Length: 74
View: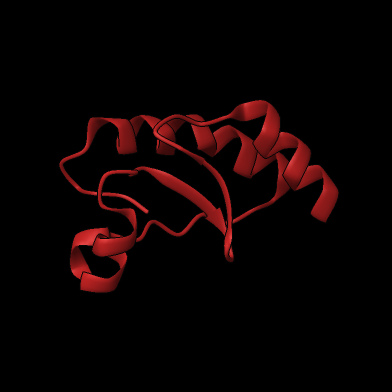
């Protein structure tokens, strides 16, 4: 979950890119402001990294947690 004007969102996207490449994962950036339900749920938490309904982290990439999670679903 992201916002176009959010510097933390951009930072997380950049930090996530190497992990996504390493694990062969695709990343889909969803703008919370484009959907009122998503905005209500994630408004103050963005950026939020999700896999399905599993929240991995918000505000900043938790690389260790994300790496462990991705390793477990390989």
